[in-house]
Structures are given as structure tokens and as C-alpha cells.
Image 1 (spheres, rainbow, N blue to C red):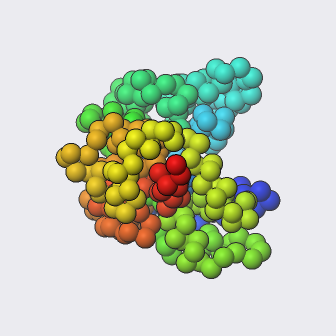
Image 2 (cartoon, rainbow, N blue to C red):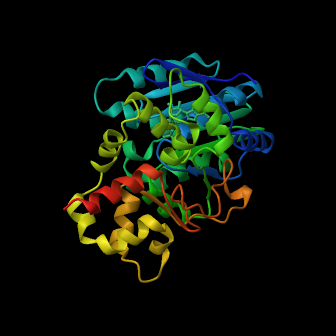
Image 3 (cartoon, rainbow, N blue to C red):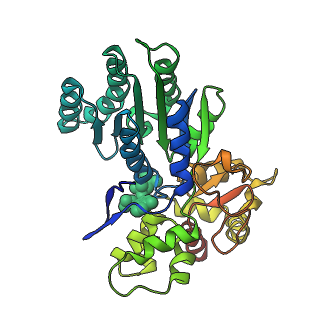
Length: 332
Ligand SMILES: Nc1ncnc2c1ncn2[C@@H]1O[C@H](COP(=O)(O)OP(=O)(O)O)[C@@H](O)[C@H]1O
Ligand SMILES: [Mg+2]
């Protein structure tokens, strides 16, 4: 398998590692096409973009024309021999004004349609982080529009693979209600896979166990800790800026319990207001599905693991998010 190279941290480029089940998942999609749009949701920095980029390369090798866009990073990949499509993506990405992001999101779908019209038989359209750019209220409309490629294609096709990835917990809830999107969750990396990534880091690193305990397998947290010379406080600070100190203080007694066991937030009497905010800030993932492999893109998290803040129904996105909350409610 040709592995993509990814910029990991300052001065560190790595090859895509692990995620074997996630790759298998794409293989299944490629074999049959996706009947519905696959909505992939997971913690910030868990590796959705890396996996999609690796998937793009694989899909190409399996005979697909591939259009990948990432609006947040103003990035795109076009494995397609239609000059017009490539030109329009390049132009949109280069645009200086704020419309570049929306344009890229729209183009992914428009160009997939255009390719089908031009008799391309196998199309993969991969939309990464588009909801922030187009606005969360347009998320459902966007996914339905993408579905229309599958259901009302402008030409005959053999197979379409349609994937939308997001870390917006709110969009997940909104879209999860509909039958036309299959929600699949991607978790942080499993321990063994994460270890492979950790071992690629140059220089002296703290022992693996410590890295695992701090990151819970989240590659982006690993990258940040590496860049900050493992100054945990600094990285925690970065996380907290997203939260609201005063707000967290108000819910102190609940949070004191939630840092010990996030499933407390699953209780019926847990304050909705608190839960909503923690979802909105991407601090927790609420309503984790059963650990049935088919509900997950790659390996599911453990059933429950107090060390890294994973409960049966609710989990801290990473141990550092939990640590940020712990510090916020301790400081008075
Ligand atoms: N399987 C992997 N192999 C190598 N690097 C990875 C892998 N998954 C993620 N990374 C790296 O970790 C960082 C965060 O991953 P990213 O894909 O951006 O997360 P997400 O899109 O879920 O927010 C990136 O630098 C990415 O290249
Ligand atoms: Mg991403």
C-alpha cells in the first residue's frame, strides 16, 4: 500500500500508520459504493483528515476518480483527469476572500456531478471539515445535496463513495436524526497503532505510557506536546481557551464527578446546559455507540477506561480536555 506522507509537527513528516480497520472500511465502500452518505464524526485531531487523505490515494488505486476538499485548511486533492475540474478547485483554493471555503465545499459536489456527466464511472467525493465554512445550519442541506449524486446521478455510474467528516458534535446530533446519512464514529488511535506513531518522533521522548496517559491516543495532542517540549500546562492552556472558566465554575460539583467518571453526564438528572456546552466546545463526545465494529470507522475505544477518560456513553475527547476542566474548577 502506498502510504501518504503527512506533516505531523514542526519539522516532522511521517508516513500514515495503522488504522487497518479504517482502511478496510474504505475498501468495503469502494467495492460496493455507499448507499448513503457516510458521515464520519470523531474527536478533534483523532486523525480523520489523515485517514481521508490515505483513503483518497487508495480509492485512486482502485480505479476511482477522487475529489477531496478540506475547507478549514483550504486544501484539496483531485485525482481526476478532467482539467476543468482541477482548474476550478485550484482557483477556489487560491481565492483570497473568505468565500474560498464555501466554494471548495460546493465544488466537491458540483464537480462530482460534472464528472458523472462526463461519463466517469467510479467517483469518490470526500468532504472534510466543511460544516464550519458553510454554517452548521446548512449541514443537513449539504449532505442531502451530496446524497442526490447517488440517488439522482446525471449519468450512469458503477459506484459512488460519498464521505463527509466533521468534529462538530452539534452537527452529528442534527444529522444523526436523518435516515439518509450513516453515522460512523472514528476514535483516537488504538494503543498499538499510536505506539507506532510515537516511535516515529525524533529525539528524547517521555516513556510511551506517559504519552498514552496524556493523549489517550490522540495524534494531534501528541504533536502539540512534542512541539511544546512536553510542557503539559502550556498545551492544557491551549485547550482551555475554548472553554469558559466562569461557566465551568458554576457547574463545579458536577464536573468534579465528571472528571472521575464522564458517564455521570449521561444520567437523566445531568444538567442539559452543561452537557450541551461541553459538546459544543468539543470537550466531550456524548452518546458513544455500542462497541460494535460496524458502527465505527476504525477500532472502537475501550468499553470504559478511567485512565484516559472514556466511559460507556460519554468520553472526554482526550485526557488533556479532562485535565483542562480539572484545572479550571480547581482554580478559584
Ligand atoms: N494514522 C496516522 N498516521 C500518521 N499521522 C497521523 C495519523 N492520523 C493522524 N495523524 C497526524 O496527526 C495530526 C492530527 O490528525 P488529523 O488527521 O488532522 O485529525 P482530524 O482531522 O481528526 O482533526 C495530523 O498532523 C496528522 O497528520
Ligand atoms: Mg481534520
